[in-house]
Image 1 (cartoon, one colour):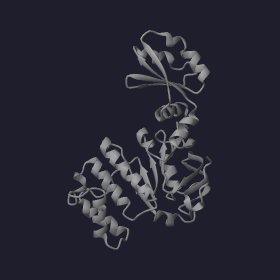
Image 2: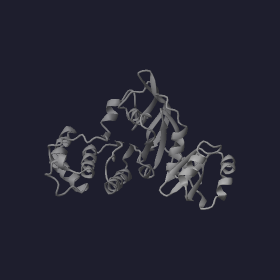
Image 3: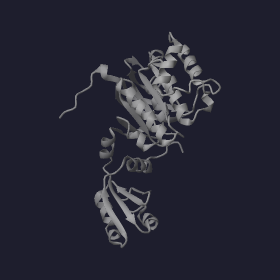
Image 4: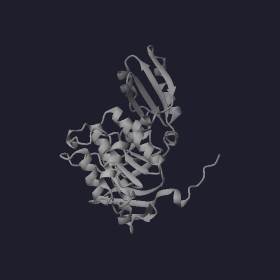
Length: 314
């Protein structure tokens, strides 16, 4: 079965050769990317690797030093103001008014967007996000999860075509994170395109596509399954006794690209299968240790990519 080529109307973002430097340091290098409408596109990578800069360039909030492209059908360089009117932006830090109620915050934002009936729009958003009963509660008194819902409601009040989420669930409990992602998928199903940066592997796995960015370079992108397949990692899950000693013995050996503890087990991975198998062969005979060949996880790939990424900012 061959994949169909998306039409221009189906493409939300199409950029080529984007680069950006600050203070003589290149933060993003020669980025080319295409994002389909209605896609949740995740960006993962180490801190300071250019994820936020990339997202801001993709939607016209930041002008690239070089390269060209379109966002929502508009030229990113010439039509940045038109793009911005179609974008909702939710940052990691809660940015609404702490001393206003949920309702007051939403009504205020609706008026900023020029919504005709701000009160009715705020009531509808409160109902949609399950904030009923909390309308008059001060935003500053909300828990992290409820603040997150309020912030999401505020940045989607104007029905944007593109939503930017910059590590939106940092410090939020697992249930609130799951509820948040359920709402994001519902929005995407209605045609909203979402760009999100995250450090959580379970969140990256909820994205339709992901890109791994390391110090300004996109090392790999695609669906989660494609990214794992491209890694060409051979992975073993090791259980048993003295795993700390085993980990120290394996680190740095030929064919070993990653050794990482996962709960009561150890993940051992490498891109050169023959070298990896040769190194672990004598260790597999140790009493009390069990080796099981397993499929690499996205986290295995993430750690291995981090291990061989060069921090060009140091």
